[in-house]
Image (tube, rainbow, N blue to C red; front, side, top):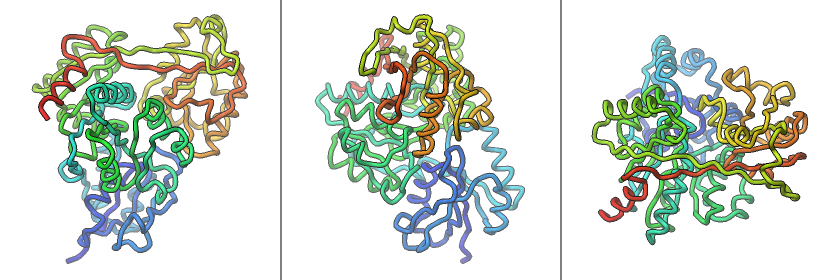
Amino acid sequence: MKKKRVIIMGAGGRDFHNFNVFFRDKPEYHVAAFTAAQIPLTAGRIYPPSLAGRLYPKGIPIHNEDDLPGLIRSLKADTVVFAYSDVSHSYVMHRASEALASGADFMLLGPDSTMLKSRLPVISVCAVRTGCGKSPVTRKLMNILKRSGHRPVAIRHPMAYCDLNAQRAQRFSDMPELDSQICSVEEREEYEPLVEKGFTVFAGVDYGDVLKMAEKEGDVIVWDGGNNDFPFIFPDLEIVVADALRPGQCDTHHPGETNLRRADVVLVNKVSDASREGLKEIKRTVRQLNPSARIIAAGSRVSMYSVDSDPRPVAFLKGKKVLVIEDGPTLTHGGMSYGAGTVAAREAGARLANPWPNAKGELKDLPARYPHLKEALPAVGYSPEQLKDLEETIKATRCDAVIFATPVNLVRLVNIDRPAFRVTYSIIELGRYTLTSIVKEFLGGL
């Protein structure tokens, strides 16, 4: 039988997982290439032989996605598999049209083909869009489980941007362990807040190995989702976060709508700042697509404090000009023009500095790639060079202080030569049914 030649379109996460669990050991397929989108620095690499397996002794090349039709022709691909997240439905179908017009089949692998099964109870936290507030929900969930007498461990959706061999299966249990491993800003943003609270986080490239590691240390697994992707592990309780500030985006992006349709619980976040009409729209969408889902609400609490060696009160910021640095993915492919840092700056009475005239290196290209960006600077740091660009941009921006709302403590990674304030955010449970009551109900049924 002739092997089917496959191209997997990805962004350094779902693509590798789909290969590992579906294609790696199947001789009837030959994965000729991965393509890279969304994330810089992933194209031009090789998915290494140690991860690709015995059928791929030379590994698998990773190409830029830009010329998909040309790759289909040159690699004689029969099938294109789409394997990344937080893109509009129309975007997916445009990629499908490129593949179909080039003569190839177009394929989406679903949960039953890609989810691993754990011997432990699994609770997943996913979302309909990037920037809905999954991370505070995950932290709250971990605390609930711990207070209930359990030993929760988190498995984080992959962000395989560095050495793939070294990242095969990773464990982070304290700050020295996190500091000892090569991690981008985006990775640290997800690991550090949990590690700081005493929780162990597992991540990597091969989630069969990651799951085995995690099962040895905890008694409940929390899947900490990335973007708006669905879990890699079968969840026993599926929590999906919607953003009350983006009511029309519950069913507009892939695979966020999949999450919404699968959810056991839809947590509508940031309701304190939302309109009544927006909340009604979200509830209508949930009831239409997933009538059996339980809907709960949460507000968002924003806190800010000085991280200077010579700390200053927040009142220092009133009337001052500040550079705001926000969570990177929320502002880039998440589509938001501002985040918690901007909210905190305005509440403190500060004026916002415009970073873009002084942006350095690769940061200069961000407004062209993401035209919705305004006065907030997304924290991007996929490489030492990009971290240097971020540091130089901070230095070049005329401002009195820097406010950063990145989950990672940015002063650990770059030199900030002005008064610096860190913004953190947590969820406030609202209503009769809450995350706490639902989790306790779930635990009682185990």
